[in-house]
Length: 114
Image (tube, rainbow, N blue to C red; front, top):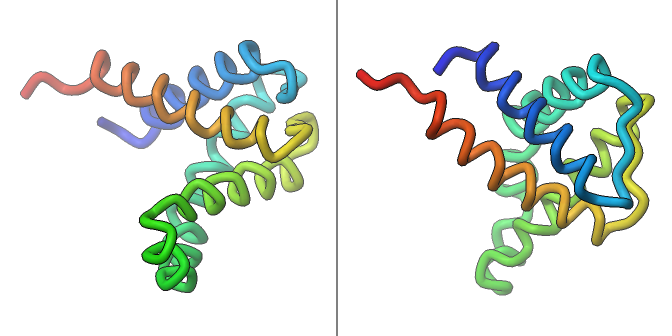
């Protein structure tokens, strides 16, 4: 799947998650695409560093600390992108779970059938 399709799938997932959750607000479609790009960049470059640095606590919590890392990534994206607001840590957690599920479903629907 090409990068642009992945970003568009993530943008749709972000828009649906923001629509479903009362603690998450996105102003317009352009902001949605920017949020998808920022999340892709943070997940590509920052998240692996955080996972490596927090490996001991992740092992102690049997992987549950990865949810905290996801929350931090979402909250950081909300700080970087104007027009994207996440009210609480619980909203960020639910947002990351919903985006992951919707992205997974849409990715399987639009996957190449090679």
